[in-house]
Structure formats: structure tokens, C-alpha cells
Image (tube, rainbow, N blue to C red; front, top):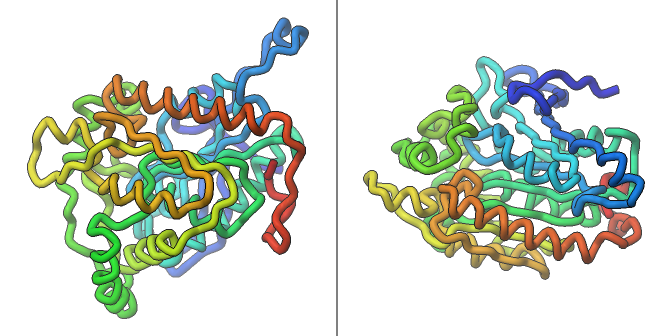
Length: 355
């Protein structure tokens, strides 16, 4: 039986730990956070009125040097009737333990363990219901992780929503291919050797200049530092390997929505332009790579959006939510009356949440 406890986000949020065993740095765990929708009113039940995302579960995965803290993002889903779950991956946020290398992993496939355990928990909340739909929601590195997972697990989810996913390296495909041999050589002998720190804290400053202040006031700097966690060569090799997989095509069999800022700005020095652009990813390169995810990919470009679109200034933030809502309305109308879909032949774990 899953034991839920009060979460650091306060009322409306609970969390549970997922045991992942241990590695050379000690015990490993991931943390699943949940926020559930308010029950429908008596009159809505009597009249048969349903919210647009009733019967939908959402699993959110954060980006690099990050964790889940966005109450407004959860509310967007729960107000529409969905059950919202967020996963702090091993060595991130709530799951980070003393003595661990923050965010370190040397194979992105290892995240299959906590994603699978999270889905095991989700499908037992209020009893198993095979008709529920599963939406995967990933930001930045979390978008890469979930894209790769969806490609390896056909039939297990119903939609993939990506908020500025890290699908290609900033130096483009050619630059990545030149970098891979050097990173791989370093990672082979010293996988936890730290690469030069290139984050000057401008992205964090941009969020605090224009973003939702109540949300950002919740941030724990131990889990989401002003400048990102140090990057280890072994972790970078894993990321580059993921980019290479995307480059070859993932064949994802579900609808994919990709939300990106319209522009990329290089953060070499502080200017107000950095409050109106993605300063982390080359969004045009990501848009091209997104077309390799699967056969049904929608790309939405948000003017003046930051890297995390839902932490942008009020105008672009509202635009991002509106675009997401519009896409979900169409997706839900298409899937609301579908019968449960079984996993593709040979797919792993056929009893996971699917449509």
C-alpha cells in the first residue's frame, strides 16, 4: 500500500518515495508528488456534466538542475479534471541525498525504473481503471527522457506534451557529432569529472525579473540553484547519446505537442532581451529535431517565451497555456470515446496505463 505524506508545497499536494535500490553513492530513491482535482459538485454529477480532462492522468518530469515546484502548472490540469503527478528523478530535488552527485546518471534508460514504479502507483490511486488516459509532460531534459521512454514503450501512454524539450545539443547536429568522441573518452576514465561552468545565472535572473513571483518564491535553492548544478562528463555522454537516438527517429506512436519559444538568445551578458527568449536551447534546432519524434507532431512557438514557458512573463505564459489548452481540447475530443488500447506486440509491461 502506497503511503502518501504532506509535501513541501503545502495544501493540495502529497508525495511518496519510490525505492530504487542503491549505487556507489548510497541508497537511491525517486519522489512522486500528486495533486488531485476537486470532486465534481452534486449538480454536475446529477446532470452528467464532466470537466474536459476527466479520466486523464498526467505525469510530469522536470529538467536539468530542477525539480517540481509549479503549483500553477498542476492547477491547470486539476481544474480541468485531470489527476496530476510529478516525478522528482533520482538525485534531484526531493530525491537528492547527502553525498550524491546532483542529477548524475550515465544512461538515460535507467530512468525507466522510476517511471515504471511511478506508473504502478498512479494506476492504483482510487483503484485501477484501464480506460484512463495517460499524458506524459516533460520540460527540457525531462522532455528528452520522456520522449526516449515513449519510443521504447509503445502503447503505454496516450499523448506526449513537451515544454522546450532538450532534443538536440546547442552546437547543432554537426557540433554534437564532433563533441561526442571527446566527451566519451573523458567519461570512460573520469565519468564524474566536472566540465566548465557556463551558466552565469542569467536564466534564473530572467525568471525573477518577469516570471510568476509567488511560484518562484517557493523554490528551494538547494534543489534549484541560481547557477545550474555542475555538469559531469558521464552525464553529458548520456545526454548526447539521447540526442543521437532522437536524430535517428523515435517512431513515437502517439500525438506529440512541442511548445517552444520563438527565439534563442545567447546569454553572454545581461540584457533585457534575455527576458524574452530561450537562453538555454537553440529552439530552431529543437524544432527540427522534434519532427523526428513520430508521425503526429504539433509545434507551437510562443513569442517572448523563456526556456520554461510556464515561468515566462504574464503575456507569453498565458499564450503557452492557451496553446496547450487548445491542443488538449482537440486531442481529448479525438480520444474521449476510444476503447482501451492494448500495448503493441512485444512491448514491455502491457498492463501499464494506456488508452
